[in-house]
Length: 243
Image (cartoon, rainbow, N blue to C red):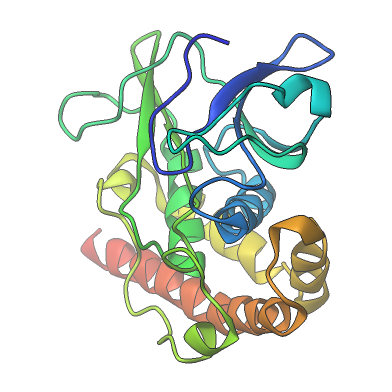
């Protein structure tokens, strides 16, 4: 469909059987399947935290649907399981600090900050700004470079340090309250080790990663959960001390 986006993964817009539109990345996209795995984990955890992230889905691409579709290098799109995020309306612009004010959905963006800090953001934070009555709703997009820049593995995850600051390059925490932060911290703290195991185990096999890398990802998420919760609670304490 018209409206395909540029970018390293070369996504395209598809409609599903219920007339919904999705920005879809192919299983054999140029950035490899682990980018899709990162997108998937970010979307699932973001949903649990109430993050301002477009709804996501594993999209089944039939042979008939992708016939004739190619990447810029001439390779054909593969059928099978792709990663899709719900297409935001009217191609909203990329968010820019100071341009899209006031931000109306700060609570959801505080959860995006938590997701980025938990996973580890390696590509900044892209976001789209949708006009809304009285201001803007902002949606975090493109989590493919969270966790690691492309082909992360067990070794890179085990060697990564714990987070020491909240990933908030756009200043979104300023648009939310300590109550919002406390809710995010409580919800993240309630995501169990078994929950992380189930989330990682649900990544389609065709995307990779290998079994040892998946176990490394579970350990990575488990290890980083409490440091992120602590950073959020420290932020709450610092804010309350000002009052």
